[in-house]
Length: 357
Image (cartoon, rainbow, N blue to C red; front, side):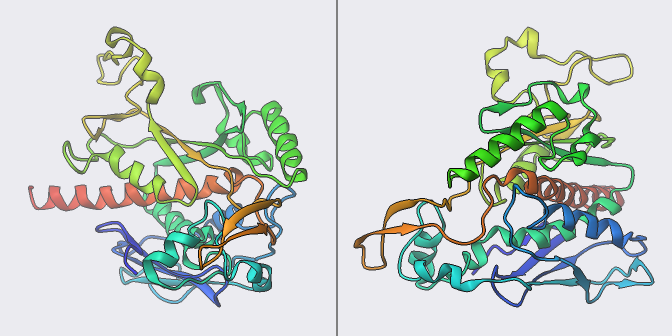
């Protein structure tokens, strides 16, 4: 199976399955001498872990990271950083009913067709539990990107949308409620709606908005390595993601050029930021902001028609512990993937400047 690594100079390779002994990863290319705050790494994992509130899956995993290499006396050594996160609360029997059938809108069917075999326990390698390893690597990347601020928050759940611009919000307030929405009133609405959906045995999707501040001018390339293209790839690699837009996004298509153009101030900043901090594939020094769309979780606690491995029609009913809405736990994952992209581009930029490329 290919496709388990992400990044060029600052790279992450992940391993492990949802119901295996452990998940883990190897970070390669992280520079030496970076002082790490291990508590901050664990904090990001705690923001992603299951069982943290009444509106997420009740699988109880401590998700404690254990580093095996690449760190000495609290600093990176420049060698590969290896780590594991043990699985301690698997309930594989919850999936025995799908051993010979395929869950609608899951990877089960295509995985089986591609490889001729599948781990049906929670989706195996295709499970979103794999993203725990990404969060560890992203938390380290954040500390490498000193001075660059990466913050994400829930901007919609179902039909409930936070329509205020991020510039009018106190983004830090997102961590003060279990939905991770910086508007307390909207957060309460979203929480009630998620509980209602869960009571119906159903699920709902939503969006996560991410804002990157203090990024210098010059990261990214104008052709195939555009900064926003790599950010889009990173976000679309996250489980359940169905869409990515940055800057004015799709709403910009309804605007005229005279309205959409970002006019310059004398210092090179722009009066507006419809470009979303990126022009011609290169960061322009303004805030980068983008939105990521997550579909409803595919496993629902309702009976649905499907097919078995012989192609016969059967019925199945969702079992186990699943999120009624994934977006509150997706916030640190979005931040992590953004950090991995920026760390990679920062090293690429440094290498090219050093070699006068």
